[in-house]
Amino acid sequence: MVTTLAFRGVRYYISEAFKSLWYNKVMAITSMITVMGSLLLLGFFMLIVVNVNELTAQIENQCEVQAFMNYEATAEQEQAVFSAVSAIPGIKTVTFVSKEDAFESYKASLGDDAVVMEGMAPDFLPASCRIVAEDIRQLQPIIEQVKQIDGIAEVVSQRETIDNIISFTSVIRKGCLISTLLLTIIAIFIIANTIKLDVHARQKEIHIMKYVGATDWFIRWPFIIEGIFVGIIGALISILLLWVGFASAGSAIPDFVKSAIFVVPFGQSMPIISLILIAFGALIGALGSIIAVRKHLAV
Image 1 (tube, one colour):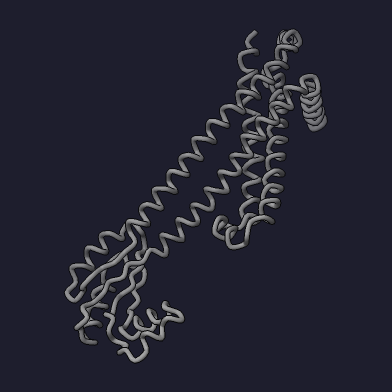
Image 2 (image 1 turned 45 degrees about the vertical axis):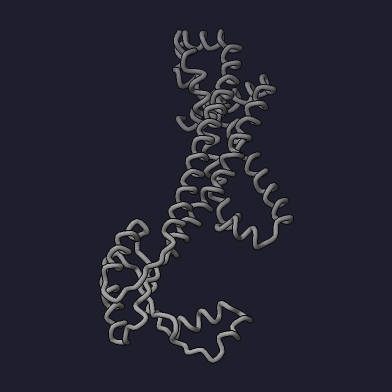
C-alpha cells in the first residue's frame, strides 16, 4: 500500500512537471539553451583544467637541476661529491653523469655536425649530478645546499621557467573558475524565472492545495523535477556538442598538436566530465526551482 502511494506520488510529480514544461515551452527551451551554453563552457574549461593540471604535474616531475663539478676533480672527488649530494634530504633521484657520458650526450645532440668532434678527448666536459626533487617547492633549498658542497663549480636549473609556467596555469585555473561561477549564476537565474512563470500561472491552485492540507514539499516537487529535467537536457546537449566539436576539430588538427594540447586524451577525460556536467545541470535546475518556489509557499 505504501509503495503504491509512493509510486502514485512520483507519477503525479513527473506528470505535473511535464505539463508545466509544455505550458511554458518557450521559456523552458530558453532555459535549456542557457544551461547548455553554461555547461558547454564549463565542460570546455574542465578539459583545459584537467590537461593543465596534468601538464603542470609532468613539468614539476621533470624539473631537473644539474650540478657541475670542478673540471679538475679526480674520480675519488667526483664520487665524494655525488655521495654528498645524495645525502641531501628532499631529493628524489640523483644521477651521476661522468665526463665520458657528458661527451657522448653532447655529441649525440649535434647530430650530423658531430663530425667536428672527431679526434677530441672525451673528457673536456666536467662531470655532473642530475638532481630531481621530491617536491618542486623544495627545489630552491636543495639548490642552496648543493652550492655549499665542496667540489661543485656551478648549479643550473630551470626554476624560473617552471615558476612562470606554474603561475600561468594558476591564472588559467582561476579564470575558468570565475567564468564558471558567473555562468552558473546566470543559468540559475533564468531557470528560476522560468519556474516563476509556472508558479504564477498556478498561484490559485497552490493556495487551494495549501488550504486543504498539502505540504510544502508536495507542492514543491513538480517544480523541482521540472528544473532538474531542464538542467539535465541542457547538460546532455552540451556533452553532445563537446563530442561533436572535438570530432570535427580533431580531424583538422595534426596528431602532434592534439597530443601537445590534450595531455590527457579526450576520450579518457570526457566520461567523468560528462557525469559531472549531468550532475551539475540537475543541481542548477533544482536550485533554480527551489529559489523560485520558496517565497510563493507562504500563504
